[in-house]
Image (cartoon, rainbow, N blue to C red; front, top):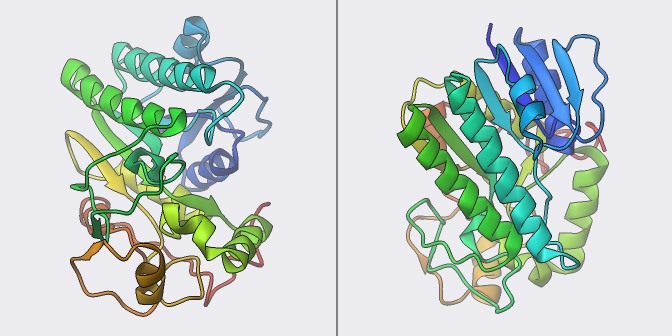
Length: 288
């Protein structure tokens, strides 16, 4: 049993991560701007993660950190504020984890770090499936803040010897949230070309985080994690021909193959997604 601090514990991924970890016998301390109420928690702290004393208190007695807290998606009203807040909380949480003797950090990065989603200029990937060797082209405050998070994680490993894993998540959802996303993709597949129609069931996101906590890997790693298919009912080859005709196809693609190469995640973490929107209950069950 490991004592884990989960930041951003009231978010749509955070809630499932907390429940998943508790259900598998871990002790969990939760922190978020909004209180997290669960009698199974070791502790629950509400506040701003830019508060150093709050972070230090939350890390007391903790062995591993799951860092999910961030302002999600580009904030067009205050881009500098979003970038500053995300970078500040990432550095403070991971640096204080090092000072507290935490052994492992798992952090939620994003496909936004790739730089296709939310770009002000239409971009296509250089090659598909996209793997960790693909250049990052982020220009928006959210994507840039996720690149900074990944660099902070690497620096934390160098400075403190902590093993760190950053998971680049696509859209995550289950139940009604996923249903709405699938409907949006069906109505306008071109609007979602910049995220390569990637998706992941939120329950699988929670499982991937637990797998990253348990993995016998050392060092600092950035990994793509996504479902093996797209969120579109249009065949992948047709999507590429229509929206990304210049992308080099470097591996065989099945009819609805996803465009993120997650083989490194599978190899290092032993994780493969369990839910498929075409064949399982992903769109009929789960939290909103």
